Image (tube, rainbow, N blue to C red):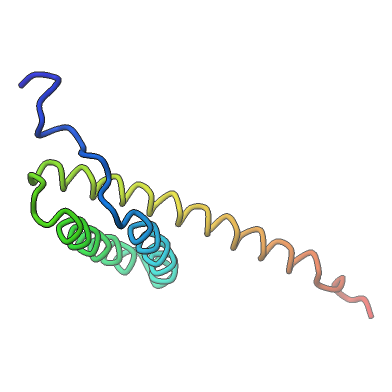
Length: 109
């Protein structure tokens, strides 16, 4: 295999990139929600996200990409999903810290 192997190259994103970003955002919220239910629920959410990403890629590329190209696009989407989930979790942590600071002092009136 050479470095210029077309199986490894990712084709330019097809139209529908906004649809991908919307799906990533939706899946990130779902991942955070289900992660709070436990490790196995979070793992199941990742598996479902992978399936949904693969379906979207296949639909958008109309089956013209090789499996390796689809796999690469799905990996990129899942990386984006995890980055988005991390950003959302940081926001949730910051909001929780602010709520704690806003609580009245213990024992005070």
